[in-house]
Image (cartoon, rainbow, N blue to C red; front, side, top):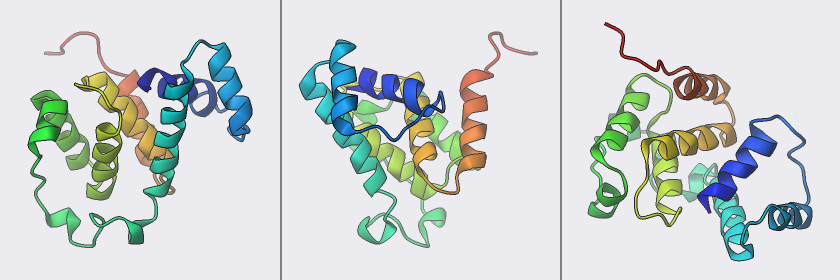
Length: 157
């Protein structure tokens, strides 16, 4: 399913193509690209649920005091996200790329991926997908793009 999400993100969203494609056309294109129909439906459902997360009155973890809260990860979340990934989430929150609400949206979407483990690169892409879908986060999206694409290949001393 994650491969389908990456395909959609790279071919429609990140490339700034026309993203208003009929679901049937999109499904047909993904089938022609070699993706499994069940996985296509899961990926489209994943994206639909991401869009639904923007309605804060429907999501119990979105509240005004969330910025002062400390995030404690569940055992299931710890199994999915290693220490490096949890540290990266904390880092992007501390530098203001995401806020606590967006962090929870990211965690929600990560848990819905049905993967046994999430790599740091996968996490970065999910953050980017979430930021793209949240109105008013254009600057944060640009910052996250910089974090993904402008990483130095060597350590600087």
